[in-house]
Image (cartoon, rainbow, N blue to C red):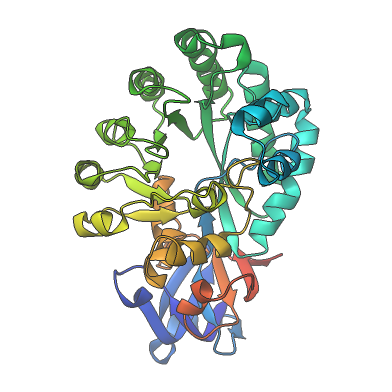
Length: 399
């Protein structure tokens, strides 16, 4: 199949979106075989079926590189309580907060988790997303964490999408281990990681390094176990304070350090040297009414690659629109439209350790998004508007 009469944002080169005006793109065997100006399309492809794209824009299919897509229950009542003036403690005493999600997730079957996750996944797919990272972390027992990961794997069988899983056993200390975080790491988190890896359920290992979660030393023990299993790591770091999580992530050569609102210049240097991506999550910044934005200008000055994601979850970022995250990255964090689009394509792929997606180039996967727009900046410009014309997954037009 050859796509002709289109503008192609390859996202390969820094600057100008890697834009090819009046371009053509050849798909063969689920991969991109050729891309370039239509005027120089090689004769080798003369017999391939052609599709006139009507001057539309083609980008790499989008990648949501940080989500908590699989979980039980919701926290709408908690949201309402807070807006009616309830304090954090009052919400917690009423059964709210992350513990309410842990309880609902533990009580949910694998089928329940799949059924509830599918509408959220469908919302992302409808915006041109072809790859979604899904974390565990709301079970916090071996049985429930494995159930979450199995549910995440099943999503890939039910929709034309690629699912990348992250084990987030070090997300929170469960009630039964209150005040015994080290015991939880040793008795539940690390043994569960090993069991999940044995079952083939884990692509990467994540953690939450904050005063309300786990210390750098505790996360380091989880990372050591991950490295021993041959698994890459990533980290929720510097969201609410600076505990040294970003530096820790860089020391371990992490794929990404996520949130990073409180990262500083030394953190930026460490990320740049390690090649670790800074994943920005404006949905949580917006929902939590935060005022400390990530140091985008510092990251930019040091050449830190920046990804963007929804952080879709039931509490701090109940957002499952990557196009909205694209706009928020620009309006809240002052990314340029090109930086933002690169953050949900090329740099998002790098944040997941994927070398076959995120840009349009020969040999890459045939995962594309076709848009009813003329220029890539339009994707970040509009709010609450989806200009997707069609999504191509693995070289085929997909719903």
